[in-house]
Length: 353
Ligand SMILES: [Fe+2]
Ligand SMILES: [Fe+2]
Image (cartoon, rainbow, N blue to C red; front, side, top):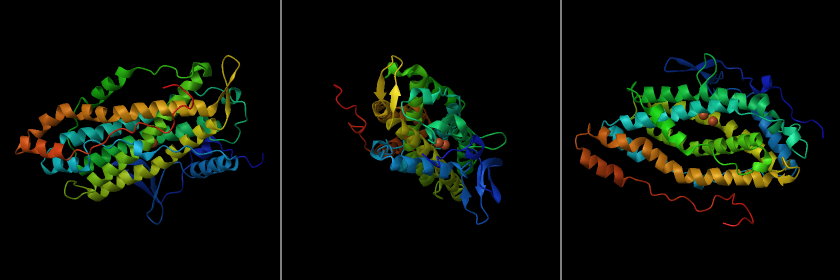
């Protein structure tokens, strides 16, 4: 093997030169604008070409790149039409709540830097030099964490969603219980049972986390489009350009997240793993198993979770409208019908049930 794509953490965290920083609602954020005014995502100078090189290597090896089917993505609730209806009727609280949930979930992304990365080479039969896998603890997880929750005096996605919300909805009052309710719901499920105990706890936890974040990131594409559609509509947004562009910038920053995660998981898929009891297991069995589990759960739970986050307050918030009953009827009539697909595309082969 020659010219292996190997990068230092410093390189993977390095920025394109920018002419003007991104300031959102008075907060200095990551990224910035080049001399032509085009937005440049943070930490992409070496990270984007590195991911392209790792993907090219997979292609040379004839290994497929994982693709999460977009039709598994549940629609955002309230949908665009419902959100605009509420805002036109002066009912802002549910939107403030939904946008605050998004900003908090973005901030949770920082947890990826705390994921324990075991000595990966010792767990794989084949070499992993010059792969995305070999760079997870050497810059990729850290860059991701910084993008989501900010770093030092620079805001990240958490602060950028807050800025979009506050600009579009004119610095609304933020309900005090958003985080508490979100944590309450998350805490209920508890940690998942080991799907592959023979793989060892650390590796399963790391790969499970990555599969989970990959699906969250892909599903977030729908949330971004929703955010752009609602917040850039001058009928309902006080800052259609500022808020819409902010969400577009966040959306651009997410591309390397989806790309490095699916690259690293594809690299696992193309390899063989040592088990703790001295046997071997195909990486594809593990990755497909983890993706199948997270996709089945998320397509099932996300619609009800979003409703739960909102519904209790929805009826109450609608009391501020001129005719709450009529508004509720109109709101429910705009519901997008959606049923979770029965298949994820990552079904374990040959397994019963
Ligand atoms: Fe993000
Ligand atoms: Fe992300």
